[in-house]
Image 1 (cartoon, one colour):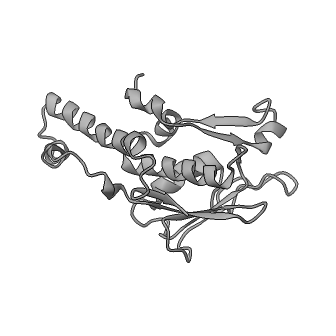
Image 2: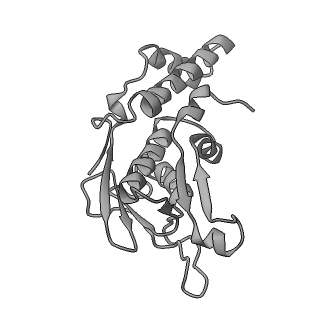
Length: 200
């Protein structure tokens, strides 16, 4: 199994998971996530998955500047509804990293380590998402605009061929390469571009 090389160049996300520590899952409770792992979970790499990963990376860095983020102690709110656009895809990526879920998550052990009800949709916010620390109430808003990084002009023609199953093997390969080239520009070249992703 091989992935595009740039996947390994994307900064990782380090968390401390007290539940994992308590249950002996990880000796020190430290769980490190990287983009390749998130791609495996999502089943693909695209601007949406990349953006969700970056949103989480940036938000957790802002909320926990000096220590690993505490998994299971971050609330996440979305302006969109769960079934709107790509909100569900973004939520799944963020949930994998933060542990936050809506009503379907872990109910906890004797009142501790609960993960459910930490993710809400159709929130009264103006940003793409808001991340809040449960322990101190500190929040950050995150805006993500992938339109700042447009696709290669050849993508439209190739997508039409691929979607109608009229593309040959070479065209399918080129389509995939150009698709990931855009993802690379999002994750690597524009990782600090505040016009694309902004935390405030």
